[in-house]
Length: 174
Length: 117
Image (cartoon, rainbow over all chains, first blue to last red; front, side):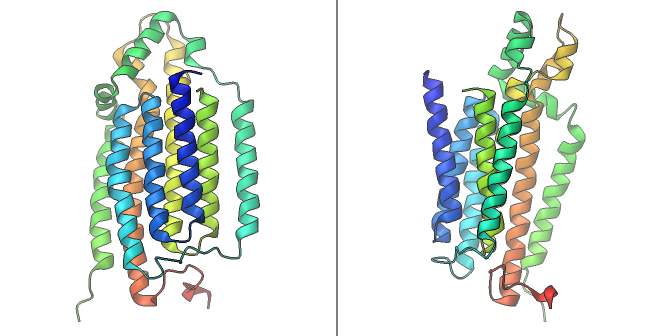
């Protein structure tokens, strides 16, 4: 077992454990904190996958913004202490999720993935490694050439979301 | 640490998120579960793009141009857009939660059934 393997299992355990805590904990405030832990563990997994820029974005947006927003929302509404109860769908939902898990796991294990280390030549692999060792500059190139339209649309989406959120929570004028 | 490990982890996280989204009564926790599912999908996208050969790279094996080799990061671009959309979604979702709480006085999903009557 290499150091990376140990890191992977630790991060995987942390993310799954805190994800389970999110859906089972009684207090909504604690669930939000566990969610932040889960996001942090996933950021670590991104680092293991050579996605350093994404890891930074994950910490900035998910841990820094989304979790804090969810904490605010849980405090602004009532029942923050014991409000995390289940509805009547508990057993069917558990069954459905388990079935989906089994199905997707079978698909993952049965598929014959064409891995880069098996199919590419040594020099191509070296090129790919070069890209993976410094992702931000390559990501920028990709975003502003091939994905430039979705990139611009994303800014419009964010503007629409800001305006929409403001309109929704505005106090009604008499 | 292999592709299968990451994908199985992603599947487990997604199922936990799905279970939470289906069973919780509090809207805020349902939103949290949806964020968990987004995260699981991101892990899968980044893992696949890290390990699986892109079709463009499979075609030519001699000299790889910059425009082709950077396609190994396509999964990361997907994850980036998913994060952007998730941020917009959670901002709007919480605005709706606050608006519903103001008008109905509750965030219990089973109590918000005005259209069922």
